[in-house]
Structure formats: structure tokens, C-alpha cells
Image (cartoon, rainbow, N blue to C red; front, top):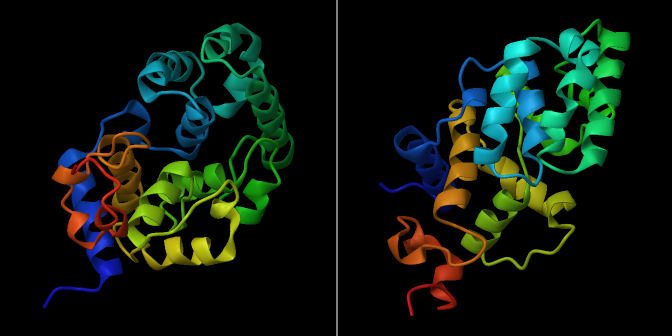
Amino acid sequence: MPGSKKEIITDFMINFYRTNGRKYPWRCERTPYKVYLSEVLLQRTRADQVEPVFNHIVSVCPDIRTLYNRFDEVVQRMLSLGRRCRLEYFKAGLEYILKNYDGKIPADRNLLLAIPGIGNYIAAAIRIFGYGIPDVIIDTNVVRVLCRLYGLQPDGETRRKKYFIELARTHLPQKSFVEYSYGILDFAAEVCKPGNPRCSICDLNFLCDYWKTGKTDKK
């Protein structure tokens, strides 16, 4: 018996990651520190640009205390990715973690959200990928995928709306939530793209409301 739409989508994302998942250094030997660093660098920046910067920083700054103490030495590498403001918040966040938690990133969501520069997305990423704690990761990619699948009209506030957070939460499996979370992000990047989505080759198009509208690449 085929599962419900939610079950099919969840299982698909898990299998998509297992068979097509992208390989990045921050996905190997995951630690809260590496996840935190990677997510800060990845904000509005392509992963292929981030990879050499990430590799350099972790090679010379293996932990939060070292990065904070050597921040001025590596900041130019980070600035090559743009968005100086995120680095100001990042340094403030490092200082906060050192002052309040002796350099150990907390796992509690509320404690994470109190750290300068950490919002819902980075907090969820640290919990899921760094600590192996189930949480719901929501960014523009997740909004796009789920809104297309369910025929919803997204806006700039969709990720913060209760109905959408609950929709995203219903897809989170009790197990394999790491694979699911990576899977939906990779699916958004490789198939369900912002422009020119690859709908005609998508194995989920049979239950996708966006595909049924005809406003896709099947024309």
C-alpha cells in the first residue's frame, strides 16, 4: 500500500540524499562548531565558494576559542564571500559562546537563539547536524519545495507562519532526520530550482500541485 503524500515526500527526500546527496567537508565529521561555521559562511553564498574558505579556517582554527583569538587573521578569507555584517554578528556570537559557555555551543534551541547572529535556521542546523537532535529546518529552499508540492503561494513571511512551520514539522521523520534535512536542501538545489525547475524529470511530479498547474518545464 502506498503511503500518504507526506510519507512519500519524506521517504523520497531521505532516499534522494542517500543516492544523490552533495558531498561537502562540513557534512563529514560533523561537529556543532563546524556546522555553525559552515552555516554562517553559507548565508546567501554558493557552497562551491564556501568550501575553500571553510577548509582553510578549520585547518588553522579547530575550535571556537582559536577562531575568536585569530579572527583578525582569517577575516579576509571570510570577507571574500561578502556580507561584512554577518561577520560582525559572527564574532559577537563567538564571544558570547566563550563568555557564557566556555566555548561549547549549547544544544538547547532557546539558548542558541540568544546567541548573536543565530536565528531559527542556524539553530535548527546546529541541533540536527551538529547534535543529532530532531528539529525542523526551514529556509527559502524548503519553503519553495513544500509550497510547490502543496500548491501554496509563498511570500516573504511564509517561513515564519505557524501553518507552514507545522506543515514542515509533519514531514520530519523520527529517524533519518539528518538525511531528510540534507535531502530536501539538495533536492531544492538540484531539481526543484528557483528558476527552470526540472519538473519533467522529477520523481515527485505525480503528486506535485505545482506540476499539475502546467506552469513548469513540461511545456
